[in-house]
Image (cartoon, rainbow, N blue to C red; front, side):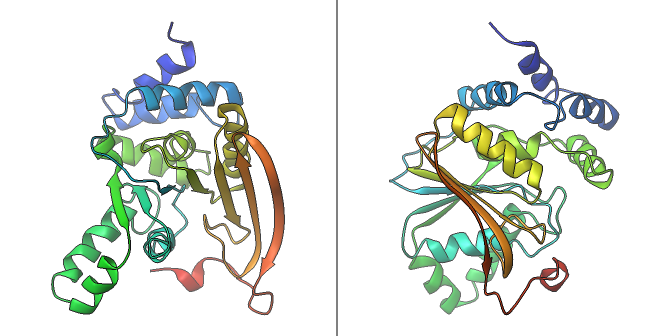
Length: 246
């Protein structure tokens, strides 16, 4: 039987206007929902995914984005794929300068004219999967409503439930969190759903590990194995996202 929170979430996929999307997403603020409600939405997304094809044993990377950088997670995923198969999930830009889907499209275009870039990409086991390929396309009215949430500083449900959902059955998922509220909710969901997941965040407000103070938590089968704050490259503190802006 469908719960009320899932019924409300489904409406965010069917609204007719930006204002309606905005009101619905405000009613589903992730800082006010129970972790169990978020888990119900995640399970709904997983039950309705439409991913085709077979994936080898791999790591899945999907972060919150919206941090004003040059899409660090996509570059990190490509580098990591030289050592382990990686599936990177993403969309066109919503709240950031450039979405992972935009970044990968530009990269593939550059690949056609750069043999060295093509060689680097070929040497890794990397695959990019757009969220629309999993059956969750965005309407422009929804993008605009989410941008409004971002401008007004309202936590965005979509930045939690869609990145956290399991689309490709990885042996571990990595979720980057640009805000502390997203980090905490990812951790709660990892425990509730029994997920094997690595959650990362930079104090600079980036959903990656960067020079300066970072936080990382790891869950194995829903059990928190560690949750630690640490300085990376202590002599080179990150003053903020400005130095990475596109």
